[in-house]
Amino acid sequence: MNRSISREFEKYLKNNSIKLVPYQVIDRGQLAGKVFEGIRKLSARDLRKRKSDWQPEKLSVISDWVKHSLAPIAKRADVTIGQLSIAWALQQKYIGFLIVGVTNPQYIEINLKADSIKLSEEVIGEIDAAYKGLENTIRSTYGQSIREFRGLNQKYY
Image (tube, rainbow, N blue to C red; front, side, top):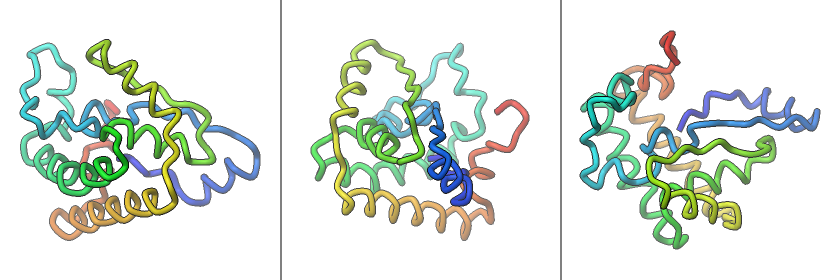
C-alpha cells in the first residue's frame, strides 16, 4: 500500500538494472484480508498496536478499501488478497524479491504460491485504479497522502 517510490526512481532502477527489495508487502497483515474478517483484536504484545495505521479510524478506511476494492479483484483472479498483493509486487520490473512476514506457518505455503501467479495487464490496471481511488478518498477526506495518513513519516518507521 506504500507506493511512495517516485516514477523517476522506478525509471532509474530499471535503467540501471538495480532491483529493490521491499518488505511489509502485505502491510503487516492489512493486505492479507484478515483485517476485515474480524481479526482486528491484536494481542497486548503485538507491535502493530502502536502503529498509527492500526488505530480504529484509519484501520476502518484501509479495511473498507481492501474489502470493497481489492477483495473483488482477488476473487475474480482466484487468489487470496495476500497473494494478489505479493504477485503485484513481484511483477514490478524494479523489484528483485520480497520480504514477507507471517504470523502463522500455514501462510508460508500460501504466500509462496504467489510466485507462480501471473497477473494480466487488466488485473494490474484494476489494482492501480483501486489504489488511485484510495488515494483520492484519503486526499479529499483527510487532506493527506496515503503515506501521511498511515503515519509513515514518523520517526519510528
